[in-house]
Image (cartoon, rainbow, N blue to C red; front, side, top):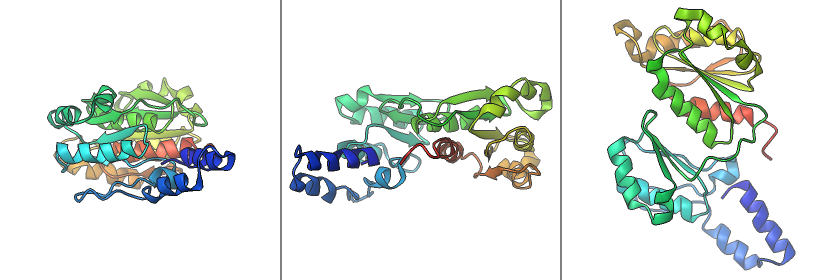
Length: 258
């Protein structure tokens, strides 16, 4: 249940369209549902403004279906499932009821699925997702789609790494106009510092595991981003496009959601 839905429920009680017992029954089952293998958090949207996101890796298709059904049954209009390979995604789709299966949208590059359509953007501006190279797009798209599912308009700036600085400088206007930026890079991870030196908004840096041996699976980029000399740069974990997109969307909605 999201805050908006709670407000509508309370207003319905106030106007007599719903009884206090109706509200009590609705809220009594709201905190979570115990499925045995998982306890879907049905109150997260009310507490945080964003409903629970399902992490697909390590879960069976049947478990994901059960969690999605519980969340949808509690009134969640859109659900994001991350780290979901194509084979498991097809099994999830086939396990959903007809309505949810019709609204199941699998994105192969970032390996995530949407149940329900993204909302209309309602942030204060837009989130710019900057990816250093084509090899980083799996992570960039995870960030971009996450931000879109959280109600942000996203501007994608791809293949703008520092090896060809002119490609990035061609997008200075979009960078300086953003309300939040996600900077995604592997190798040495220098993109975050360059973007941080151009932007007036918070920059969420996300290192990827892309690179040769000494990149150490993204650790080199992570350390570079953590040591950025640009102010206003924060860093998420290696390959955590979801976390970067989520954080940027929250920044884009400061003052919007009550």
